[in-house]
Image: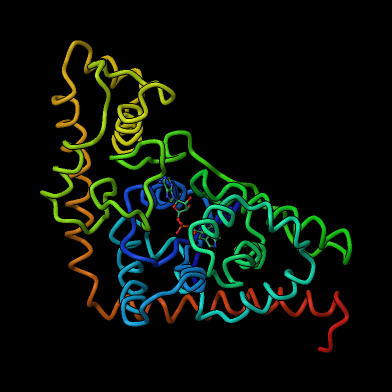
Amino acid sequence: MKEFSSTVTKSILTGIQPSGVITLGNYIGAIKQMVRMQEEFKSTIFIADMHAITVPQDPNVLHENIRSLVALYIACGIDPEKNIIFIQSENEYHANISWLLECNTPFGELSRMTQFKDKSSKNVNFYAGLFTYPVLMAADILAYDVDYVPVGIDQKQHVELARNIAERFNKKFGETFKIPDVYITKEGTKIMDLVTPDKKMSKSSDNPKGVIRILDDIEDIRKKIMGATTDSECVVCFDPENKPGISNLINICVAITGQSIDQIEEMFQGKNYGEFKKYVADVVVEEISGIQKRYREIINSSELDSILDENIKIVRDIARNKFMMMKEKMGLYK
Ligand code: TYM
């Protein structure tokens, strides 16, 4: 059983889809926050594989990506001693809870989810799971009565939906769920695409030059940063509206080095964009090289399997209790 220090009282939970190798955006928006918070919170982090299948996946590739993501979590600094790490589909109670919640979620509320509107507009042949996905995400969160959900800003609306679903359920059937808060760090809010910096850096982007993946070749990462879109002004200053490319690179630096925006602006006063980009490339490459080294050490180790086997028992018990409680409150047969 995982032992948390007695001073640790509040809890956090987050998940990432194993749809391709995670990006620098996922790392900064979600994983780095979890690493920072794992000292102070009871932490749970999972692989959202059932979310990944809301769009078609190659089964063999998906299977590999799931294991790879577990190894990446650990390589990125998620400490298996301080976190419960598990694979969503190994805990069937998420889907069970999700169904009960779906039957209490208005269609209109789901229709307003901006991520659904975006994704469904790109491909009209989408599946029902893409539409109901935010309810599964609510189930992931509400099953564990967590205090905070650290995510990037693109997932904020989904966490707010989870809050609404929980509040409505509590009101209708009596106190059942803790109401979670979304947790977003300022610098991790949204890492943008390097080529089109008005778009978020995304695993599903069509142009690989705009996206840094954590397992990319180190020299390619350097090239992508050196080739990032900037502007013609040649002043390193933070202005997301008018200088989205430079502001994105500043954001990346702030998130990785812990420096402030002012410190970075001051460091590069009077210097050209080439010098600034070289600095960004150096800090990113240093961080990612360390992650890749640890990743290679653990990807084939049996330690991964033991961690998953131990943790799944813990989360299944918790989620099962929540499911049984919901069934009873809703009048289903127990
Ligand atoms: P996913 O897999 O799209 O992204 C995982 C996490 O990375 C953050 N993120 C970013 N942050 C900053 N800049 C970016 N460019 C960027 N791109 C992605 C996301 O905000 C997210 O925090 N539905 C979720 C996974 C999920 C989940 C959950 C999260 C399923 N159940 C329960 C929290 C709690 C998703 O698709 O994330």
